[in-house]
Image 1 (cartoon, one colour):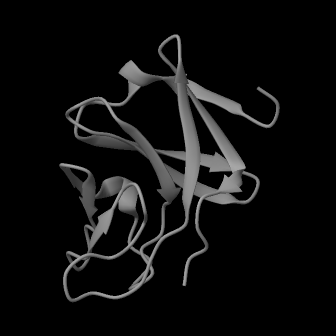
Image 2: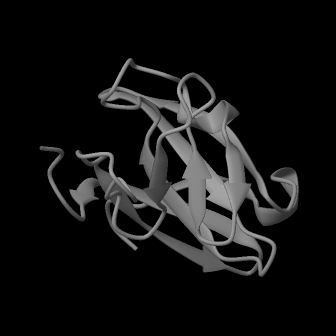
Length: 110
C-alpha cells in the first residue's frame, strides 16, 4: 500500500483512547473506539488548539479537553451548537496494524 505509514498496533491504543503521531506535516491524533473502530484527525481543536488526543472518546466522537467541543471522529465536524471542523485522514487496519495515509486528507478543515 503505497503512501501508507505503519503507525503501530491497534492494541497500543486503549479502547476509548487515543495516541498522537508526529508526521512531517504536523501531529495527528489516532483514536480507537469501544467497538475497535480506528479514526485519525489533526490533533488540534480549531477553537483554542486543544490537543484532541487528550480528549474523551465516546461513541464515535471526541470531546476536546480544553472547552468541551465535540467532534465526529469520521467527519471531523463539530457537533451541537459549535461550528468548525478538523481534518480527518484515511486509516486502515491490516493484521492488527494501523496504517495511516497522511496525504489522503478526507476533508479540509474550515
